[in-house]
Length: 483
Image (cartoon, rainbow, N blue to C red; front, side):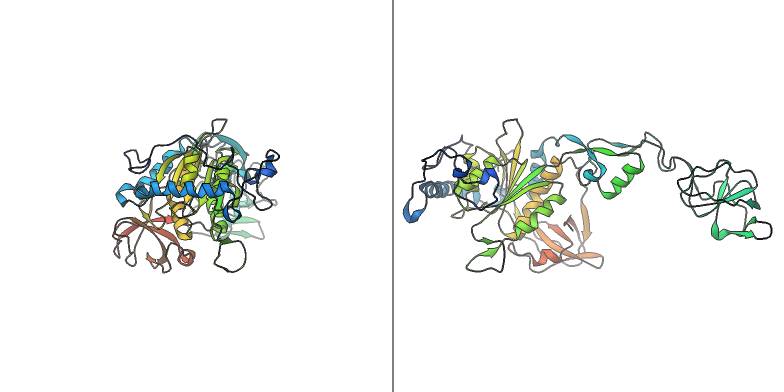
């Protein structure tokens, strides 16, 4: 890792765009499944010049893809020492999260949204009370509004919430509902269970011992806040409770930061969308898992697409994605069909994080893609293909990046005491699925990088430092999405 944390020692400087031998000018990919967005369609469906054809190589493979595989293999061989170097070359888990937050830069611009549409965004402006709360004195209980000391002569008609009451004369009382405006002249509210009405005289008597204090069971005007008082700072996440407070304070719309748009590319020719694993292929677990997780981090997921293990198709997908953040799964290591590093090199992207000292998921990456024509910055998070490793990458890089782009204030650390010892890695931070056990947390089995069984039972991910955590010690927890 260089001093700025922008790559690894020995990593070659960025290069300008260079086409792989045999690729056309656009680096166009071969065909794709029906329904694929425009930037993922085969070239012939996007207006490829007539008469232009791929030359076929050995076994019918287009020479562009065959050359791309060779270029990718040579690039990975050049990368080999850096990718597989010792953990000291990789940023720590804490440093990687800090780099991801910093990569976001300024939060996305503020936009007005209706209360319903503001849910899940972050406030771009402080929330200030537009009125006193409550806006007028109200009854805190069902009972009677009374004027002066008792007994009181009761009236026939009571006061309901939403009504404008008549003034109350001294020595009289009227029934009143919780939340109803206090009549002018009323001095207190007598709870229904503390009063008795004498039928013959219609006099209301205090059934509880002692006098009724003035202002008893009355919510005075401005008890919660005064008009103009700051209620919540900018950066507050808009939850259902925040929506309720905003509505009570008089808001119809809120100015919130725009959600960062995310496009998810799931890589791997070995993945199936339906049925049980068969023929050496496995089910895609990350396609169903990640979109809702990303939405919970404040993202707007604009697409989820399968991308084949071909350099040309991956390069085309990343280059033309309109999203603020591209997220890929798989292809972050140095396997025979891992083309992500070569794709980033061809696009002249800047690697910010290239592997992290964390288990599982250490071959994750974060890159800054070239700016769009209108100057908009785009970023790419590369997650490992193993499911739990991809979850670790989401928690490490995607979560701080998306929260910062969306303008959400950084939450304070959440901790717990361990009910049992949590095993750690000798050198790296470990993200371990844990469950609540009494007053502490305990590890779960089935925590391998390709497993999800432990995660499905977990309440959180424990951030286990190198060497592990003993029983009874404190540990930091990362929350898991619940819906």
